[in-house]
Image 1 (cartoon, helix red, strand yellow):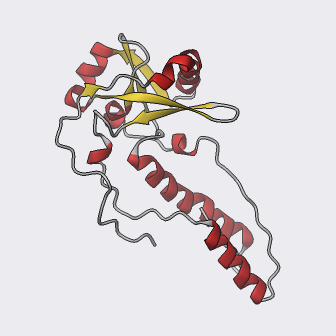
Image 2 (cartoon, rainbow, N blue to C red):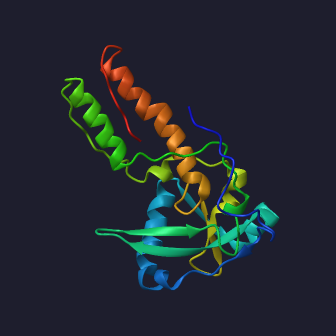
Length: 197
């Protein structure tokens, strides 16, 4: 179903994973909001705050404390984990399959084909709240998704996070396996359903 991925935009990493990146200036004005976001995500089981010494003992050279950035959106902020610069975690991720994102052209083609076939159509658009954060990560890999808001502690992401190369990959696999197939099962075998994820 997914074609094999044979090339990646980032070269192989040459530096060790271990290290701390230091946050971007965009975090400063939003420090309280980022802290509140992390506390809420910790309450949901998505993050964990631990002392730096505990993190270093637990993960050793697999502790990569990445830089954080903040992107302001209309009604919220989004904390972005920079797993590329300095820590080079993204350089080490080699997903197996190619990701394909449907475009407006894909939707127009489907609608034209259905219209030409005389099939009435309608569309439903949806968004999964914090989709990347719905994918669990193995505990031994939490150290590769670390960040800091203060020098004394490290925040570990227990789930996929924005800025990590594998987050979209695993979300798309989950979405295809669960959400897309669910639409087909609910519609039944005789219905023509097109689902673009």
